[in-house]
Image (cartoon, rainbow, N blue to C red; front, side, top):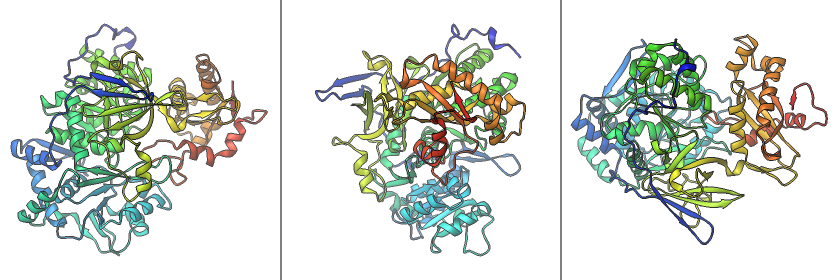
Length: 621
């Protein structure tokens, strides 16, 4: 293996990739707010998303659209032409049922071709569908969030691919009159519909044409549920206009996708807007090929991703920073894998968290080692309510943490808030609100109709908005110490995690109305196990390890040297011995921490952080 220490990435050229121009104008208002607008013109977009499936089925019927591993490990493949035929048959079957926006379809199982076919058929028939996090069915013991969603949606149909793991959730959360559809392992004691029966339904062209004609840009396409980081999940209405306008925005940004059909391998869950709206839709919108990755960015699951990406060689690749971090050791050790990853890759895209510098550097080193070129690494900003693409960076704005500028067709409003710039968005990609929750809808928008995302931004260059923006934390996460000093919790938390790698997975900051900042630390199991030389160490053993506490203490001391005062200096830490629990709302289904819930549920540990004399579990620097 070539030593990365000998690789000069700074002077290496960047692999060409055609991206949209990111140029903006800024209007400073008398009330102190700022409006930032992209000067580009948003490309025309269709009235309904299924028009793009029809387009590719007509113009490239034999092109591969979707692929997934079957039970034998082989790729099950579906072309655009095959997909439209199957979608139309399923849509015809749906139209014979009592389904509507008042009785939509719920999909409980994860990513898969059958999931995609049912979702597209629902769009074809003008019936909303709601992909739901499998965690609400499989990881929850009381199915509380699932029951809440069922009561809110009042579904007419629920789909799972495999009935066995979902049996308890279906029995506990769904009324008897909700039709249950299974691909396999349907429970013997319930009325069940086979997915194959929907697939075998005879197409009714007249009924489909009538249904298609009734679909408008304001028709509800799907419901996506927020991850519940601040309480119960909210049902975000996704209209056809939202989805289509956002695909035009994203394609205007990733302009190279218009030059050649893009290819990707993707694991991100379709019950989230990043995976189910952005990643899934942009490949269909541009006639691309989407390989469904059964792997995950976790120990024991990343190996599947490595196997798959070796065969796929994507042109555009998305992952969360932790996923890229997990891939790097494999890339360093395997020249053939590096060749497969980089041979036709145009760019990396990441989201969900800030990317640590060592991960960024590692990706550049691997690219230069393999091709002699750097591959562009970019990110952006968005939410479920923004469909999600709202901001993005191009090559001119490349750099760790730069989220770019507003997309074409999107207005960014910056409002002064606690010494920061609170971001708000307006455009055709914004949700009209939350399903059956008018009070929450009213609170989400300001008097000008801008959606209040709750994120703070800062200018990369205060004199020039065209230098892009940096994420500056969640407005609601900020708090004051007892001295009255504001703590920018988001930025501090990201810096703490970055500095304490590879021993810290996540952290919850304590300190409101206290004299100093403390931290409840969720350890990185892989990094800590390697440190203590015990590959099967439990979380409790890691929390009790003197070696782990000493290593984190050293990292905290190093990080403290960069602080400028009490607002960004973490004085004490406590390594937790149990993971966050979804039933106690400590963790969202996508793995994000609910900071408030962790502090409330572990109040006794917070008190240990602030005891006059630090106990054995507390790291004090």
